[in-house]
Length: 322
View 1 (cartoon, rainbow, N blue to C red):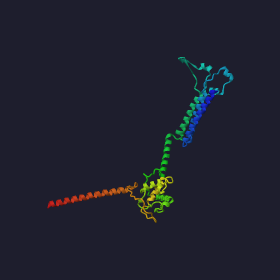
View 2: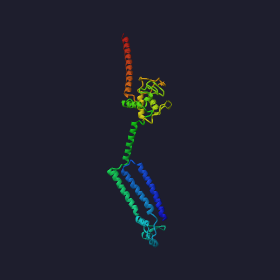
View 3: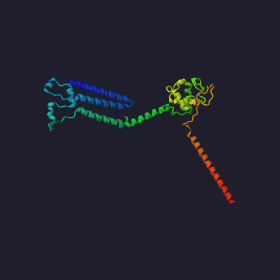
View 4: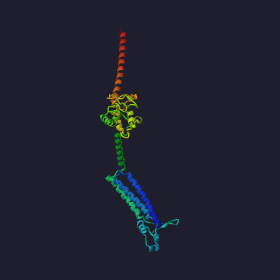
């Protein structure tokens, strides 16, 4: 009875551990299809079945003495005999082999039926797996799962790019598209006119139309100020209310106030800002054209010098002929 209780306790502990492991596996694989979940459940059941057979049915052999027969055979012993196909001790001489090694003799026991059933079960699982993944194609092999994960990652990356998650004060550039500027105007009208006025002339906040800037001008400095805020001046941080893309849009819209004349403008504050950084989105065609013009001008100068040299040579020839 004590052995039975110990076996039951061990089996319960193992089944509990396997159940928690299976639950973690299925929780982490919520994105897998139903076939993968079914295959995992089958593997779990087979492992649990194996442990049950190992700890309960593979118990020590029972001695089928005359006294035990009188008491009757327990149901565990009956299951053990059916599943393990064991031979009673009094009949071991019938299956004992003739050879021995240093007095150690070998019994010709047959393979336990439960082990054969487990082996046949693995064959069935292999056939089902092959049909599911390589014939019917309803399941995803590792390559398909990898490609699917790559697609999901690319979609998330595109979404992050669309929302401006990669935009910061070091990578931000000026937006000139009318749609972006219109969105920036909407954000400015909803959140900024109370302090800077509808035309950027300044009310509580500074004038945005002149060339003077307290914390530096340019798209990067404006983006940083809007993102981090200036608590000492009453400017709150907008990074929790606006996305980086929205901050880029409103920062680009703020730059459109430069050079305009507000109805009522505050006096300039800060220092005059001169943006010496070449815009990153400068038209490459214009740069090429300017380089071409410089090259052409150099070529013209070279041709001019050549003409002067030729004319000097002609004069020398004329003097010589005289």
